[in-house]
Amino acid sequence: MVLRRNVIRLSVIVLLIMVVPQTVVARWHGGYQVSLDGYVVPALAYDEYISFHGTYLPFDLAAGPAVHLGVTFPTVRTAVHTPLLSIGAGSSLFLIQDHPFDRMFRRDSALAPRIDTYLTFDLGSSAALTTAVFVAQPLTLYFGDKVISVLGVQLLRDFTHDSWGWGIRLFEITHYLW
Amino acid sequence: MGVGYPPVRDNPLFVVEETMKRRIGFSLGYLLVVVGALSAASFGFSFGTLDSHPSSTMVSEGTHAQIGTLVGFGSRWEVEAFAGTQITPEPFSDLVGGAVLSFALLGPVHPHANGTEVPSYANMYAGLGFIGNFPEMDAYGPILRITPLSVGGPQFVMRERAGTLGVFYNIPMQSVTFFWNIFLVDFYL
Image 1 (tube, rainbow over the protein chains, first blue to last red):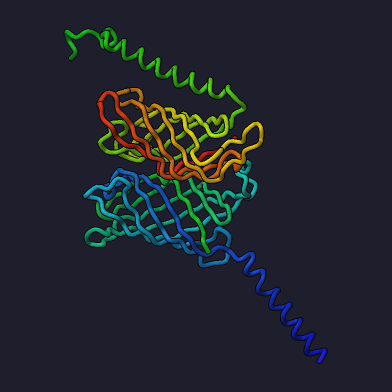
Image 2 (cartoon, each protein chain N blue to C red):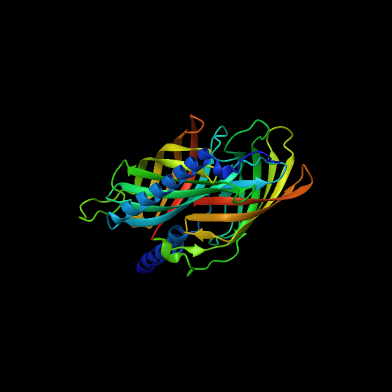
């Protein structure tokens, strides 16, 4: 009887040891991402573009690989430039805990340079592949549940005009929700 | 080319315009220095986006970024001097500058000397100021600016402002247009 009670107690303790750390220190797995871009490529307007993406981190890694799905459209709508469907993937390259900007923030932060690649599709007419975008964001700050990038550099392949272009990602803000 | 016309700098209208530009610049600088000296102020700098309605002649098409300096005084007042420039497609081809005196509508934002007021984390701002494009100065005038959502502040080292909308009276064109900052981040020193 005593042995059985102790086995039950031990089982509960083992279960708690297994479950509690997972719930307390589990990595973030998903959230939303807002970014503001300017492009210099024939397929897109010169106006500022805003993007809303859902983002998902499939692995239990801090600031690890992520996939993105969302829409991109100019903030000043023009008739000739329609919204774009955007699919992407990327990852932080490494985390630097003691970085030069650390004292600027009350919250603990890490510098986490990241690279991402997106494919955009025209939602207005033919749903055709419009551009491939490679984004390098060296100034990315990781706050755990929030990631802020400024002044990212973009290289674009314009499939509709068979040309190359460039762009600047002024801001990218990612907020993980679960 | 230009035969028979006097040099532009000899034109009396040009001289008056140059004098006015210098006065505006001096006034903005004077305002910042005096306000900063009034108290042990919070000091910071800002970075964000800048857009204006296509009908405005203030900035051309493209993506623009804005940088600025902030001086907070009292518990709710703040002066911001800022400059905006084009990032794409032609980096640094436009230059817009201005200054705004803002008031925090929902509560104190800067720690007050007597320590009796607790600064708010979330706030709204209303501001009045002046903006113009440089060096042409063919679009300038007063602005009324509203920031509906702001979180953070000097005590949090950082502040984020979203959806700032400005109503701009363009004096040379005698027209009213809009400009906005989708997002601004402020870093306090």
